[in-house]
Image (tube, rainbow, N blue to C red; front, top):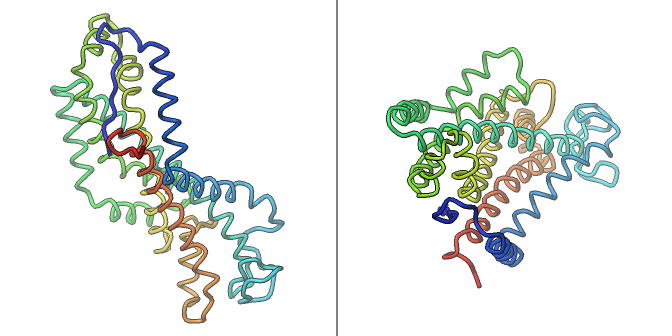
Length: 302
């Protein structure tokens, strides 16, 4: 990802308002013309709205036995039914909601931890940087998936929040290292030195002087963490370590595999959740590429 780190004036004052408006207008201009950004954000928005609004129009739970067994898609059952007579459309819309929730929570936790450690290490330097960098490297070399499997397997509660918490606590190191490298560069700028000499606190300098000049980089980091959380959660669900009191796209795949949907020719059971996971992660990647092209002048298409 590109490093877009414009700085305020060397005198420590904020950037003139006309310059800010001009840069914002230029960014919006290229955003409206970037097909990757439009396609990626459009798919994400459609799936998100489907996950939020879809369950409101379903008059039964996702795991309720409501119809004939193993029915293909029809006007009555849009995505057919399982071998137990469960409505796959209901499971799909509820599964989308759970999948987005895991992405937001898991990716958000990893983003907060990673950016906080990266900013502090990059700005402080010295012994603080060494200690935080050592902690990052220790977590980075741990087999995250194995740790997740062991941790989740021995928990009595296997909910979306617990799953997201463990995903976030094991997914932050690469974000911390990336943010640290950017913060190290920005911490030596004149306007940061001036803010430091003026007696401003560390947190204030990071949030007002360093972080705003990395806003595009931070947005793209969160998108990647979001997609990674979705994939990890799907993997845990597929091996039977998902939520025990709900439904997700990964659990739908796990159930279809367990009950031999592929061998029975019940394509309507495993294709929707697989396509949903692929669409979410793929559109996030496309969206990230589009943002990179917008924020990096060298990649812009005139």
